[in-house]
Image (cartoon, rainbow, N blue to C red; front, top):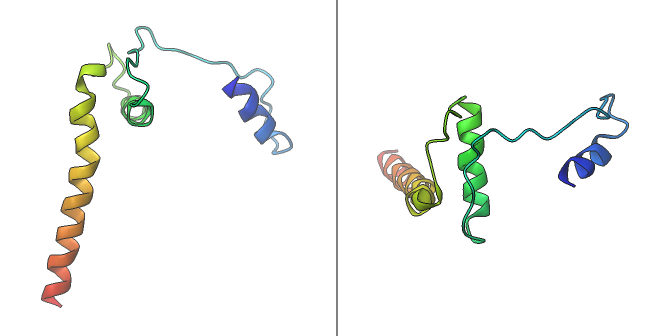
Length: 88
């Protein structure tokens, strides 16, 4: 279904989407909770971007730590920006 939506969106953009197909790496880690879809997808895409797909190094059990990582990054960035503004 999502491929069909993407094909519709890309229609008329000089791309031949007729032969696009879905590819699911095996094994693909299953999401076990309905609440983690965004962070699960981000972690999955990060692994794909790094070509770290051999057995996918995460599971549903890792999600609390994975969820905390972006929050910690944003908090650190905020305080670093505050510290820099004090020095100016």
